[in-house]
Image: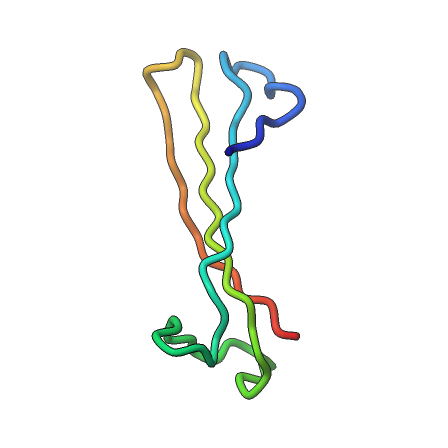
Length: 74
């Protein structure tokens, strides 16, 4: 289930779409391997999400799909 941006930016035929999926939690068996970034305390439990976005250009045949991961410490 993806979400659509409310309005398409100027020059874009179709509004961008995005999806956020919970991948898992650090510390669980088989969890993702996280590295330290900045002041992150990796001893805390973190919830890991995968963000996928799709955008088009002047026509629908020109598209870009981006995927990233985000971890939030609790």
